Amino acid sequence: MSDIRIRDLGEDYSWGSRVEGLGWHNIHDRGVRAELAKLFEDRGFLVFEGMEPSAKMQVALSEVFGPLKEHPTAATKRADDNIAPGVIDIHTQPRGDDGHYHGLVEIDGVKLASFSPWHFDHSYNDELNRAGVLRAVIQAPERGRTGFADGVELYKAFDPELRRRIEGLNVIYTLDVRLTQMRFGRTFKTFGDLAWQMGNVEEAKTFPRAMHPAVWTRATGEKVLHAGGWMAVGIEGHEDPEGEALFEAVCQEVNAKTHAYWHVWKPTDMLIWDNWRMLHAVEGCDPKYERRMQRTTIKGDYGLGYFEDGKRPGEVYRELAPGNLPA
Ligand SMILES: [Fe+2]
Image (cartoon, rainbow, N blue to C red; front, top):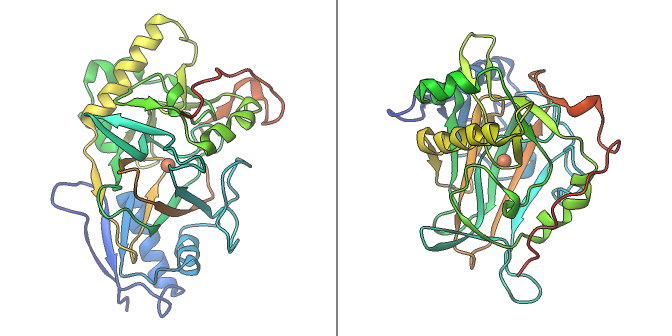
């Protein structure tokens, strides 16, 4: 008999669940694992509460949902303890060695570090990882929440005319993660890029452009609106003013219609989201605060993404816009 306790994420959400009672005593139990895998498939997003706050537990939790995979980029920093493939370290220290802040954005007159727009992970890759498991190692004492929104719900809420126009089209993404270069769906001003984002630029030149459908259909029949402006450069076959206007309207509709759950982090929380279905974002925090997250990457693919011209990373070299230097 399972001793985990499951409840809905909240009254306002048609997706997501909270799970308590998972630990070393039951995480390898086959019945518990099967129950969690089914719950994840149905609900798309799970919050595990009261977890042992360790990388070892994070890896064990991740493996309930599938094997881990190596991160597709070389420039992304790995967790120091190298406990399993692809455990990445997202550590924001916006104050550089020069004493200045880098990579900040400004929203409504407030300067923020650690901000991420709505996106799904690995959009720049042909294979789209099944899921990510995230925990906060160091959290900012205020703001710094991670937001999640369900693409199934977003599809239903989307403007029907816009939805009709974008269905069947692919969005083109690149590995250029610089927010200064983001063209669609912007809600913020930028002030240069972070050092790691600049460090990614050379590798980004060697990545072919990747295509992913803006809308796709799950095996269960539900349609998923799955697009965002970060790292996107346009619509496949419509890299023209009309296509750009359409994609800008789509990204602004994503900003307007995402019904977000914003997670306030505790050290004992771990979250998993379906990367084929959910969008996520980070609201940012005061630059004076350090913020450190660790994420695992769970293998899988929905089979709908591909690299342009069938090329592989390393087979192309493209010039990218120089962008703003950190200032
Ligand atoms: Fe992400």
